[in-house]
Image (tube, rainbow, N blue to C red; front, side, top):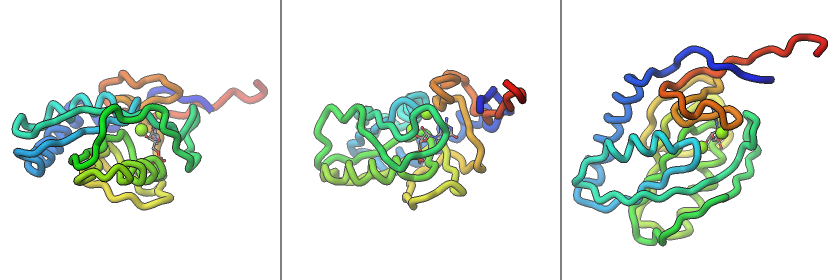
Length: 183
Ligand code: 5GP
Ligand code: MG
Ligand code: MG
């Protein structure tokens, strides 16, 4: 199965509006406090860069990144999550906000949450751009969610198919292209 860029699910304008709403919510919660925002590479890179800029200067924000793998190049979760790049600084006693592109089976965030809680942060919240509830295998409580979407594979605004199309400014549905028979 291969994919091509399909219809726009959320436009640049829709994303911008929703990101600024989330930024306001986060700002209200952490006003006057410190917050370590942890972006999960690579899918959340673009969302992360927009969400931190939507957080009010009254919040003392630090940025960290982690890279985890759960998928390889396909579109189905393995349930196994590997930490490919860990945090650089200690997070004990800090308020953490994990920023992730999409909550699908739930395994990535479930495991990541367990992993981060072992480090004894003061608090841990999760912000996802997208959530596909129909695909859930394990429940994960999310504190901020951009959009709930149907069970479709999506690309753009950081989300890839085999490392392609992360740079698209809007979120699109990836449209399956049937292989020609006999090839
Ligand atoms: P989970 O562990 O919740 O099943 O999967 C989370 C990861 O799967 C996401 O961080 C993302 O990398 C990938 N993923 C899940 N659904 C999609 C999708 O529709 N499009 C893309 N590009 N990646 C997805
Ligand atoms: Mg991800
Ligand atoms: Mg991916």
